[in-house]
Length: 372
Image (cartoon, rainbow, N blue to C red; front, side, top):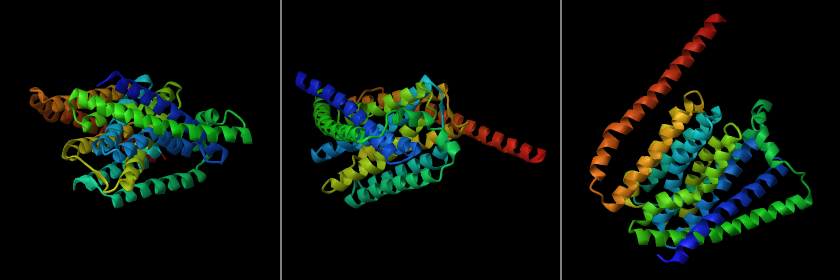
């Protein structure tokens, strides 16, 4: 690995972050100018905009004959979004979870994760399967827009902080033109940044002697998730309620349906999926999505303790990947401890907390009905 590859890799990350920021700001202002509600902007424009680096990198990797990097980027980003982004955001400030996310978006994320795993069982995601996924994101966005039109003022008021941030300047032909420049410039930076970033990542993989899949699941996934991380942590620190959670969940939906869907659709022959990804990484992604539901549901809040748990789980997952990639002797013992002790214990505690919260809610509802 030469110095130029490392410089291009770092410069690619910078371009991806700056390009995503320009795209999010420009698209957000344009959406508000067209009368789209802050709820839709928060769950679609912000979430989808911050996932645009994943789209750029995955499509570029697929066209460049690096399918492991493309699939690893999507799967790794989804794991990173829940465990690291929500974990770090909750450590910064406990996160409030909107009930709509628990009732619709998170179950949808789980359902799409199952669908992607089923698509990948035969070793690749075909073009027609990519079309199905991409049509799914169109249907979801249409549903979100329609739902926003029937929202109550109470729900809309929860997004006042974000609306104020987006509409902090008047809508004029000059500001609209500036927003269009931001969108175009952001897209250009994403395309160039993805080329530099992908090339540098491949060089690093070859230098470290690990597979492109592992690099995609870790370094590339973390790099392309920097916009989501910055957006969610800042939102949590500013007290902007569940915008941080909506950004992470919305980004996961976009990654699965739009990024993976578009990549498979434009790739001749679809996207090949490695056996190791089908056997381990995709099930881990699904398990993380399923595990998020009871934590979100318990009091509709992600506590600092939950955040630390998420971060610890990601550290354990990354450790496993690198032990496996290096063929370390400790891998078998590590796997036995994780699968036989730590993960079952976490699952039991999490489900126990969710059950206790559910019973408490039922008891409170009974007492309320009895009092009435």
